[in-house]
Image (cartoon, rainbow, N blue to C red; front, side):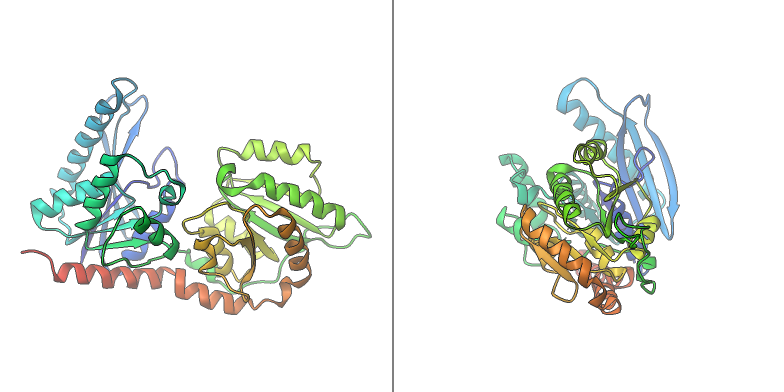
Length: 390
């Protein structure tokens, strides 16, 4: 089986973290198929279009970098993008032709996939990750109609959560074959869960402090890091036996750290900065539990990683997370409810050891392992290829 991924987001030479979850989908699919990825990226300061071909595990990655259009408006940007896309497809099809196409994130890439279906009879499926369907950002009559059209002509729609699929249908993206295929967690997260590491001495009596972690890209509008910091401030006024590691980077990282300083949070919080997935696992392995206070998510990779590492979770009860949580994996609090988060964190500090880490890992493996996701993709691809037009 030959599968061509057409992603809207993918790790590239200017941003190694962009769409990392898409690369993990491609790598999971490559367990059962010959997978190629074609990714198109504009780049400021570039004088002419250039190409790169790389390997990531068993996946062949084709990159087309083209000059960003600083002037000329939307039409010039779209024209340059279309020209780069056509050149990329020509290079890929000159050496290799897929049996199926896998679009990652609507809408432009699905238009290209629809053209391939018309030209070569190659069926395509769509995976969606985007929050726009739940936030009211899916707007514009023409855009909505075009998106509904390419969704209608796809073989399957694969949101990463039930909640995201429901939001897409509410936005008019109807299809008889919605299939949830979740994000992938790296295999090393499923290693045997070790005991939490002490985080040094506490402020009172030399008592070792319990470590818990908050892993995120620092985007305040979504992650509500300021709200979490206010809760940690109040928690620190009650007890001194904890420290929260704030793991990750992002556009609001500096503002978040400055806000922590303004609250006087020094002993209670440690900022690590941006880390690799392996370092995320190291942080989780040494923690008693993890905490997330997001306002919205289409699917939470970091919650999945915490469960895969055998660590219970304190998180908000947003639909995409609630569908993978239960009383055996942690506790949920209402969105924006700082009082509830305070009480729940205090409870978890005293009860995290009672959770069964091995049971959490077994559940997570059934949902998020590359083996599980790869098999799901393989079954979908084979069904697509079986009905392919000659």
